[in-house]
Figure (spheres, rainbow, N blue to C red):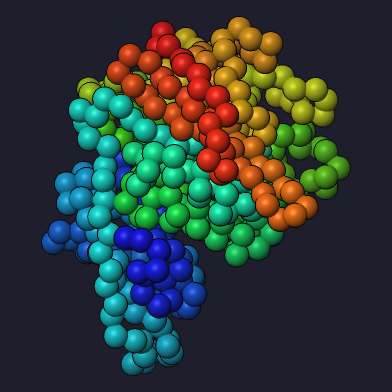
Length: 377
Ligand SMILES: [Fe+2]
């Protein structure tokens, strides 16, 4: 479904986020609405204990992967809520729009991923760069700091606009939270607008032969830093995340060692394997443990990082490998703001091939910045 074909009030094509074994579909409207999705004979609703929600403009509907993968299309049904009075509420006629969906097939050999992070509010430029693979990649990864902060609910429109422009609602998206996302009034409501698992912003996912883990460092400075003025407790959050990584390892047969998994990736906004200079040199013990657990047990084929505003491959043992990387890392996502208004964005096209991983750093002006190869271990 291309932009311009959307019905009135529906702002963007749906964002189909992959979380664990489900798709969490987020749809954004410019008015109160009640929303359902039909897949085959099944109807999935955005409800709160049986109440179809309308007091939000961003709706979330969860669908088991096996259901949507099998149908390869889904139909969004919505009615504008005109007057939700206690008796005989008034809404518009139902509108329907169908989107095709292309899951990553079990036997897919070349998985084409477009990797975006650190757009910091840029929208048109990352969409242009993200069209590297043509119609759409097999998977879009948004790796944090997409809006510049979470100070307003409208900031999330950047997330939905980029997903719309690259995927048209037709392929899965992986989302990870960046440190800028933790700032502002809506940071505490983040999971109302973005995917999560049991309320957490770290989780695993499975898409055909691909398994992945999404990690979240939270902020990049200590909780006591004056910029946060006592409003965060990420040390405790990271300790719980360590327990989560250990639980993934305990369930390895259902996770990265499950039947059919041939590719593994680790996604995190902040490259925690690197110890930056003060005040960013935090949590060496915790991050060393995360690195060890990944290196000794999970063994991803590649790590995908952002945050550094760089287009680089950090090889194992390189100068940035402070804690023992489990794999070579793609560090991607460079926004550039020019005074003449001609901004530029550089992302990365990552193809998990049969024999090697190809990484193309490309920009919104149509330039190929560099091509790199990562070998499987
Ligand atoms: Fe960042």
